[in-house]
Image (cartoon, rainbow, N blue to C red; front, side, top):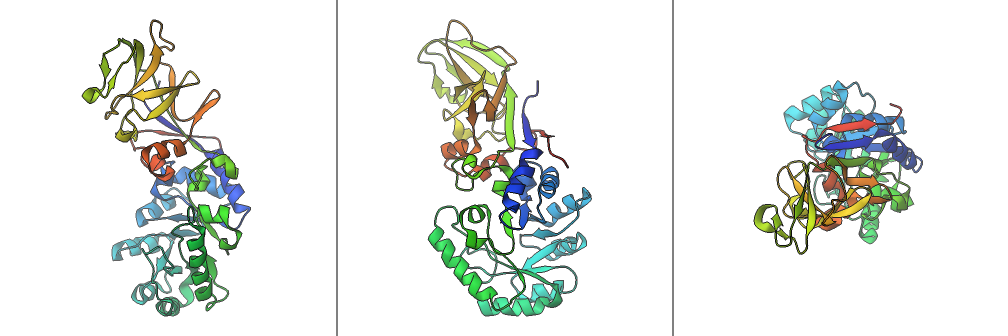
Length: 355
């Protein structure tokens, strides 16, 4: 029995990437430790699935991939300090630029992708003339032109405005690689795909529209597992967990599962989630603590499961499944946060795949 285990199906990542690469040349985003799935393993699976490019957010992440022997085109999407820039160049990673001084420092040393801010309001310049100057400063190092959509999952109208702005500007620089689409745009709007799509959440088999990955032919790659560590009767009026936030309304059995918020099971799931045991849903009851949760197994007198029984917190068991999208809705957040929050103390077991 393992206290907590995140099992990652590399074959699912491969197949998701093949699905996305059939839409347009694919840049697979493996930042944030592959959205919690393991960056190196995700990168290998993405390459095996047909990804031409990989993308990360930091110089550290680029170093990690290169140290693991992962070659090929690599783009760092985030801002870089002077020291980080030198490390990015040493890793042979392309970088993004939106200031002339930065582009001049990089010119001739690695590839540059000039970023126009068409509405995200973060990195990049909003000024097309300034972006033109950055293109000129990059010189022969210019590798791509890019922007990033702010509302591709929930407001296609604004996304189309952004696309129009980007297309009008990029037309000033014909023949240069253009990329704008994230997962939602790539799956939802043919015209956004351009010369390359930068997909993150979808390569891991999660739905960028926050509903069901199966709607888009995607397979969830990650499942989260634990086991029943303790089993005890809980009489009507007895409680479980800090603050007595669960008080039994009838005689029941309570299982203790040894995972908690230090593993990524958010405290906001207190009395607000299900887990799978014996192929059935059972409610998480009581306060999520650092290392344990408690689960209501149902009425006494007989316990329906045994100590050591497998528990699934994300994934499938029997005919039931719990998606990251379900947990995200309960937490009023997005599926990205659910898998990124699974902490480093939860081991990742990678299975399947050809890489």
